[in-house]
Length: 127
Image (cartoon, rainbow, N blue to C red; front, side, top):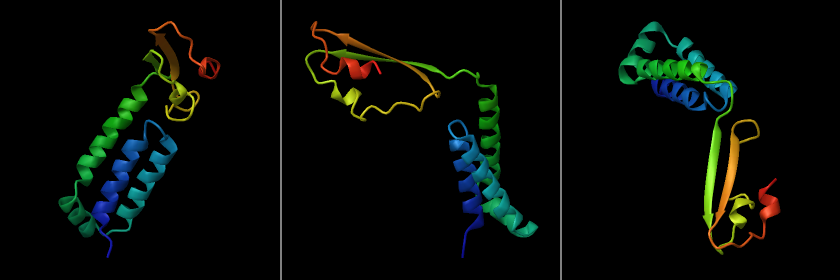
């Protein structure tokens, strides 16, 4: 048999985690928690709240939602500084450096060349 208190709590926690990065997914997760809760009798829901931290999860979600709503509309600016000397910089352009989706952050990449040598993939890094 399912454990509704666990599932409700898990969906609320998922909603909180997705809220700043994927608000529609957060909304879907919260709706699933609401649907599960609505399927329970009052007694079963109260029992689930006693056994699982449903209320603290809701309070935490509401706090996160307020934080997201207070956040500035502009994406954050991130500066990445790489100190370099003769090592390969291929990792900057071959998908090893995960960058945020376009419009999610303004990223400035600075390569500090300590040995006065131009990286082979400089043109790719400028894209």
